[in-house]
Length: 82
Image (cartoon, rainbow, N blue to C red; front, side, top):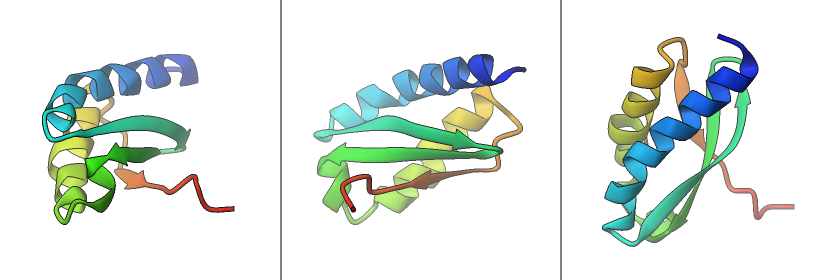
């Protein structure tokens, strides 16, 4: 799978998880893919949610790995920092 295909599959996975996040007032976007690590940014209610790390691991990471099995982990990054 090439870089373009991996990105497309990760975006497809995010589309699958997005309705669940939106139902709680949140959203997610892809920031980058660095090797086997996917960097995402949480938005809305997800930012301050006390269970966002559980959502990231149990929901987002699991869904992305279903589409792209070689991904090792998903990390939430804050792109608002300088």
